[in-house]
Image (cartoon, rainbow, N blue to C red):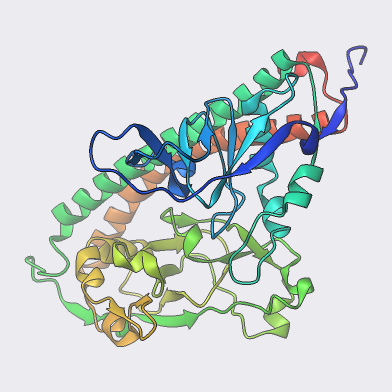
Length: 388
């Protein structure tokens, strides 16, 4: 087209100055300054404050990056306050870049930033790699429009998560209405031990030393993916050949997943059901329903509705990690109402899920739009009308 504009490309090094934060003492009550830590980049958690006057102050038009630790590479912006020692402030030194556009760009590079982290046990962002990243520099109004497309996708994603929580609450109350408390079994359904209803598969981590096992599109689910009831995909992927070359097992669709090890078990036992074939790591067990008197979706909700009972069985391993021991898990009593009543409940759940699907599709469409805008911006192929 006539309007193809070739925008300059610059390195992050020419746009920002980087300053590491420091550790602060938390203050009770009416302290002066907001103290920003890694959790706040993901979501505005409970605000924490400090009285310290020294340290790295962040303004709303700075970008913050988690520099060290499990969340290294996570980006935040639009926050003001003092930053903690695992964070760094990216101060913009070039008036031609919009901070939200830069923040969104760095978020889209999360995987690459992570893959280039240094540190064997604790990941650290590589400064050399970060400042070498190349970013297209369209005019400021266009940057703001590109950022707005993603802002919209983000808002939709949050609405989607909220809707998911509301539908989960509804599903739970319908379950309790129809079947009663699965621990007390007030309706006197016949019951069996979980071990008599399922076969169990374990997970594993393919060798990180063998890169070829980690090149591919096959989902490898770990506890960080267990944030939704339905598992379609995962953050990490492995090659299909891991199933031939290692002891990693393929897990079929409609299998229940439960996290059995990790610090999340201090307060939550994540449960989900697979919507596609996947593989899992060693902190998760897969429960395949092997008894035809049981609907997998019913079993998922039966376990979810006795969450606190399962949580009470979590113990602490020798080195402090929380774990759910298999005898405790497979010894759970599971009520088995007639299959027709289970199916009626599952039908209701599937109708709720259809509503969720619509929300998810619009989120995905906005993300695809953003990704294609970014890629075309990179190739200098973005036309002004594309972001109008």
